[in-house]
Image (cartoon, rainbow, N blue to C red; front, side, top):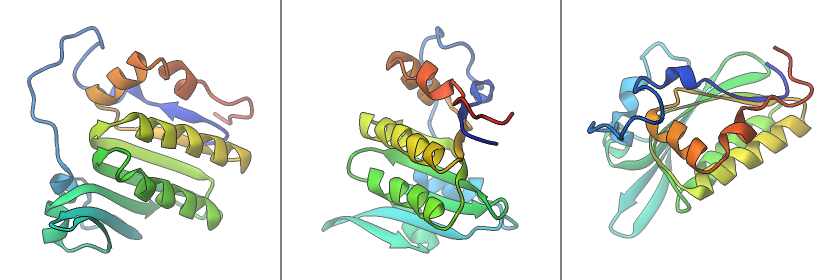
Length: 177
């Protein structure tokens, strides 16, 4: 992988960005179990669940908690220095720290290569974009990189509208292809 943040926009099944926003139903965090196969080597799963008292972070959530989750983050090891992180739900200011903590946690245990599957995201605020940029910088400083996969229409559109597509898709100077 190397020092880069790569975005595979070919994963967007909805066509060019100039298309009108299609009338489809986006997946929810409750669908998190659909993108985790029983044979996946899941290391950790964290969910942010809405309760009467507000948002609560739950480590190793039950299926019922996942079904009520605002955001679900799953970590799957690839090898000794790389990890895949899958995220589903809404990524905003209220929950962005859960994703940031998961990404930083991998860096702290010597895994500077991250593949971030965002196919399950239904919403990403400016706080979410800021977290991706910050993670990219921290990983690059450690000699690693961040690769975004599973970009859905919403994410491609968001990156283009904010002008971050070029920033987040330009490989860093030391990128190993």
